[in-house]
Length: 108
Image 1 (cartoon, rainbow, N blue to C red):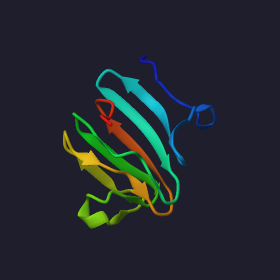
Image 2: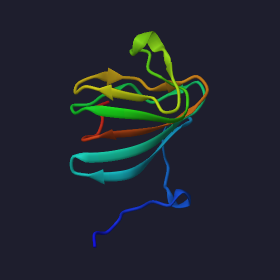
Image 3: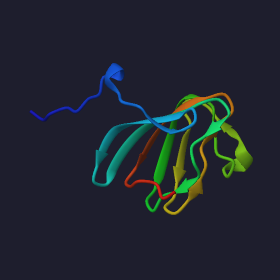
Image 4: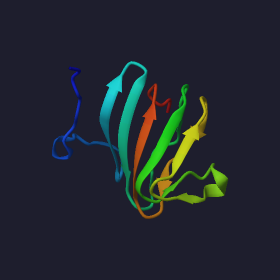
């Protein structure tokens, strides 16, 4: 039988990225990163780029990237795929939680 890796919600360790922006690492293995990010109302994750594809799934709230579709809002269940080398800036007017998966750490 294979071993199942899991994280209990109450045991997650959150790291502050910037004011009212936090992240917790769900999985970080070579070539395989899964991060849950909370962005407070009116806040933004620092502008960055990735050498590998970056994928975002909106879990809760409203996610906005000013560079995508003229800054249109994306609600829960929305999925965004950023090709390698894409620069982006995750923001939220009302706060959001996003699940991000990629193969490498962002270049800031």
